Length: 296
Image 1: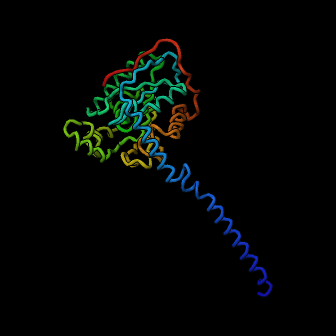
Image 2: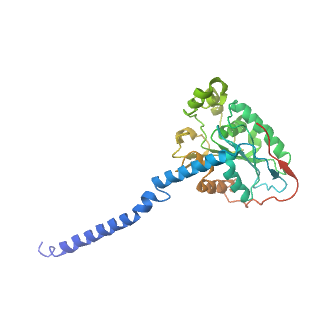
Image 3: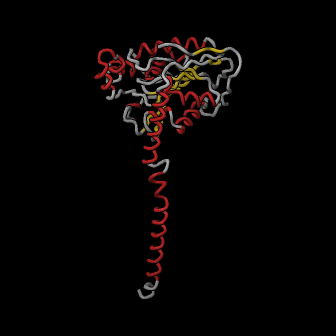
């Protein structure tokens, strides 16, 4: 016992130094941990900025005609159709569209109305006709769909119920209430019987039960991206059996605004059927053009 006593102070001193070192590191890391990009505060601030950006572009409305070139589309990078959500506009998808175009993707969007109160089935049929016109001008016979919120349900109904699985290579649903969302009651309360789509978005609606019937087609790669801070469409309502699920620590509007989400989307779009990165899309700058300006 006597021989061990001199060692105890040194051991205690070492432990104290280790604790002090740990406390020092903890204190130095606190700013980035509490206020950094990945922190709760940082994510909330990013979500707020994304929300403002979303609203600013939302105000662009639906009248955004432009020319689209379909002549240089590669089989590994088919055209992309963007579908906005309820109370959204083509403008709300502007930043996502602009980024995709800058990276060489061929992108089209469709005016389904800022206040899309029509039956989601009808919107899906409108998308069906739109896609047939697009593919009639392309060398390939496939298209990718990126749908935000209710736009994802429109794409899913097209794929599952209208034969779209033969046309759609990848369907990506961002913040889509596959199992419904109670926030739809706000639409019911304000629009009532005039808003068929609001009633269809309520959990266990007849439409959602119909959409849930049957498995996803094996010919279409389906992905869901949910936002952990989404109070409009909570994570659990986005879950879809058979789909590849991703969650990001952001909010509902961030899904079409955030640069981090965009990077995930591009990586997903450029992966081939075997999970390998495909060749990047090349910007099309000559040949025939097509105007994607349509009314809803």
